[in-house]
Amino acid sequence: MSALSDNSASLATPRKPVMARINWVRAAPWLYTIGLFVLWELLVIALDMPPTILPAPTDVFAAIVKYWSPIWKNSVQTLYTTTMGFAIAVVAGLGIGLFIGWSKTIYAGLYPLMIGFNAIPKVALVPILVIWFGIGTVPAVLTAFLISFFPIVVNVATGLATIEPETEDVLRALGARKMDIMLKVGIPRSMPYFFGSLKVAITLAFVGSVVSETVASNYGLGNMMSSAQSQFNVPLVFAGLLMLAFEGIVMYALMAWIEKRMTGWAHRSTMAQ
Amino acid sequence: MSHLVSIDNVDMRYGGAEGTLAVAGLTMRVDKGEFTAVVGPSGCGKSTLMKLVTGLHIPQTGVVVVAGQQVTKPVSIVGMAFQNPTMLPWRTTLENILLPLEIVERHRHRLRANKIEYVEKAENLLEIVGLKGFGSKFPWQLSGGMQQRANLCRALIHEPDLLMLDEPFGALDAFTREELWCVIRDLHAAQGVTIVLVTHDLREAVFLADKIFVMTARPGRILKEHYVPFERPRDLEIMYETRFNDMVHELHGEIAKARVVA
Image (cartoon, rainbow over all chains, first blue to last red):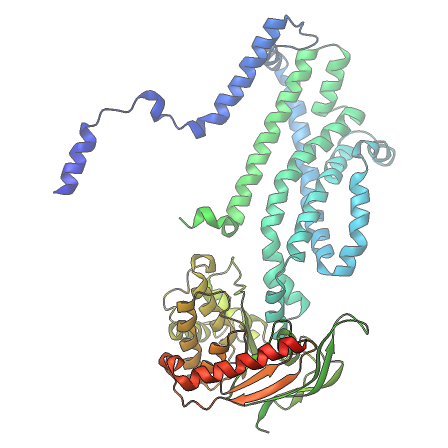
């Protein structure tokens, strides 16, 4: 009886107004992005900016359409070098991270070296890579790798280094070897850190590959933007930036999705409901 | 050969020759099947005692003998449970309880083949501690008291001869704690396991133990050894009797004195 009256009550209520039916949180990313472009367009109109200094978004989108063939080719090239470098960074970062986290001595010995290495601006390494491998794809891949493997290493090593001492005691008292503790506790434990670091690493990988392409390549968005800049084709430079931002967002979202899939137990506050 | 654990004149110093002396001249015996409690002021080396008996630390001087063998490496006939349940969040409760079997030498090679038998044993333990049907839940879906029950199951799954408990009920509320005292009491009665309980709670010690060691402040040694005369099985009601309170009172006085001396 009560169910029936509930039902009729909900039928009787008038449809909610449009503003209340929109899920504002889900719509927010799109609205804010559109808002940014609108603001940018208005600013250009208001200040009467020449397109050689700050092209309006409409000019940039026009450039994307006009130069679609080279933009597409170079975008694919940049995506390729970035993901290659990133893939190597994932493998090497995981390996080095586990190696460093294995023992306190290795951790103490390698950590300062890693920090020193990470402090070197990677753009300074590109000329060396060019001497070794020539210009083109290889230095771009390697730069993407060099810049993105550090956060992976640090995170994996942190995951291993923060095993609760009680857990270790319980297992060691049972006769567990170092390898047992690593396999049963250390590695599963460091996985949320690892997958979390992938989001940071992938965006850094883009920085690395584009820097290398800008300095030493005949392909890729970095190269395309630097030659467009030398021809004062500023809308095309911005078109390249926009493509990079787009690729970055897509790859980041992919990593976030993988993180969620692989380590659901670490996001337990939301899973528990 | 009735002593399961015997510790003779043991010194244990942390951090090299100039480091802190955690225990000095420690001597104690635990008989097979006995329920022993160790109480003392904080920092008296109770946790060091745990690590000495389980073989996680090897003493600089003196001898620790467990089950007739001098301890020189971790002894796998021991189960341990700490105040912090340290369940692994990526494993279900049942998988957490089975973890020791993946480690202990005599079980790890037959675990895969005899999985059903082991799972049955784990389910059985879960039922004893009152967690029947919770094996498939993840530990973070359980309350603190339930996690501590699961922790006890994990400590018992490989049928240890000796169960070492380091303040396992310290972080629980009073009612849950009393419930778990009864769980431990019944486990001890049913399985005949030898238990060493390290605790700050004197009522807990008197309620559960056959024998209570009082330790001095750092460097820890045994100040006094008490036999608890109360007949078993004990009911929670015993805690409101005069003889029970007298004993707690006496222990309290000794520990207060041990603190002043420090």
